[in-house]
Image (cartoon, rainbow, N blue to C red; front, side, top):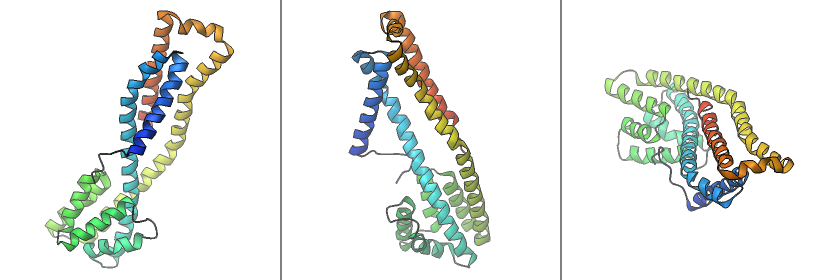
Length: 245
């Protein structure tokens, strides 16, 4: 599996189209009060789809990264007990059964690793391929260190222990940062809902005053400008809360 690519199922496509159709209808009514306004907004679903796909890819990578850290902790305990890296990986799947089911990302990868090891493929090549497919920094780092250590013939277990400990510490720091900004992400979601809520309120309570914004070229240009600004704000909120370690 290439974790940098995401292929939607038919159900996911139907759900995505339904969500964007609902958003387009709400925005079209609030900003233009016309079917034409809805039809103008609908094509921007291409941008929505790309952003959504990016978020899904990022979510899957984060899930894999979290599972990989648990995998490393299992590996670390085995290495400390004097087990070789290959045997530690072979025994990891049984020890992870209590945490993950067979459909989880890391369990699927471990099954693939076991099959590759039985075919006498070097463990460093297996991990290197996993790192490249995952496009996750922690996995790439672990694979690179493993490959260099194997070829250099150094103290593999000591190097692996140090590398694993660094990755685990980094992951813990990232979790703390994510916990810190989770509140800000929630605030940004509330903020993106403020403008539509204000427009809805004004249309209900001050309908006569709002008519000028929906009639004539000047009103439509003003509402279009507000809508474009609103869209950029939504993208900006998403950008500033996307913090990586």
